[in-house]
Image 1: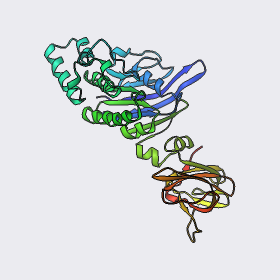
Image 2: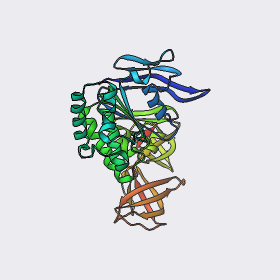
Image 3: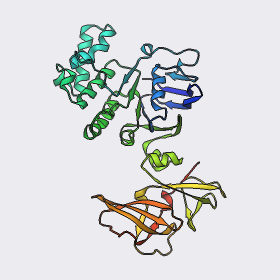
Image 4: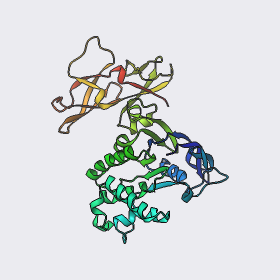
Length: 353
């Protein structure tokens, strides 16, 4: 295993920075997800780590060894990395066992060592009873496990995954998230995983690095990213928070529709325009006015949708600011009704611009 460090990494095409001054330290044996929308630079970052591209500016170190810089880039075949692509890239004329063992044969290992490693990885990935099948005889999830087995069997220092589950249906994708995490916990390779799927990132990652417009907006544990977003982009992208804007009265209070909302997460710049985020399920909806409770606003129900296990409300306060609120299914308040929103201060997060 080896740590991966990106220092001021930039990749430009003409004047466009696809990756823009990215710095990130990935610890030995950790799984880091690069998460973001299409075009944010996450796959380009992965390809730079793999050595398929040369950086315009910046450096990449693996295990303290310089692998990439504008002056020199070590080719992919000399990096001791394995990469898994969206398409699985299995050879259709080879059996499962032949696909998995191919990298070992390229390394000219002896027959006994190949057989031992092959048996071990097929057992771990639950493919032993499929060793003689061809890729065309496997489901998508089984093919993905073959790709994982082939990548892991060569004992890479670093494992790179580029949207590996995007071709699977919803049920298989959910199953494979846990499979990826199980295999990581067993082998503890340093892993960089690219995805646009928040659930994949939350399920698999030790650290999530949220990318936007070529930059890392925020990096931290899944809990930190979800509970303590630091920017409007992260708050909206992870979990679809309500993001509302007003005027900062002081470091802890935002004025919105005539109400001073207290916020315990982060600090505002007094006197300036500011924003706060709060999750849809953290807002409490009341059919009657509350007495002596802070962070309460009167609103009107614009829309209400029954979702089986919950109800999804759209409500509007006096200045036309709208909030999404998720409640239990049995809490039914008709459209057009007056309601009171309670925004608990410990769930209100101050956001930077």
